Length: 213
Image 1 (cartoon, rainbow, N blue to C red):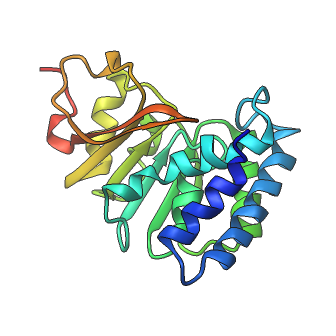
Image 2: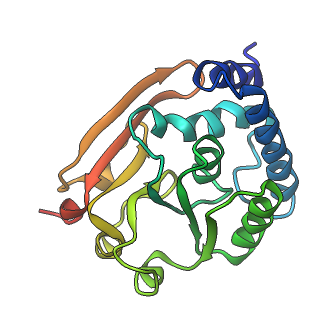
């Protein structure tokens, strides 16, 4: 049996050998907060045992680091749910300016409490629909918009274009199904096949290409 926590700890030792112990402590804190809040608010599927969060959620969230330089960038986590992928990325890359966006008030309240408990600098939590947030956020705002748990519906194209810098990109976490990208120009920037996660891909869509052709 694969112990996911051990797999994750080995990942930290490989990627951040100089402060792996400190990071592991932060992720353990986040894990406890997520488990606690998930009992009251459905942040992530309750069918998944908490021991599986380490790879299925934390390690998967960090796959963006394999192909993107996020230090010093402005990033929006669209449909953040339990703070995924935004919080794991923020823990690993403190220099990133992170906005966690979700439309459900109960979720953003829980996420705000976790962000405060973890003492994450330059991290804000916004409760709004993407379509509404696009018209109140400062523009152009983001180098990257990360989307791990939301399908790319056509109604999102315009607000995403509005929020991204001209050089900005939408980064979508995918497995095999790319049906929501039909008619859109995109680039596959990362692909892996993992014993636990299965097939995972990161798809990049440039700001100018967020429209069906």
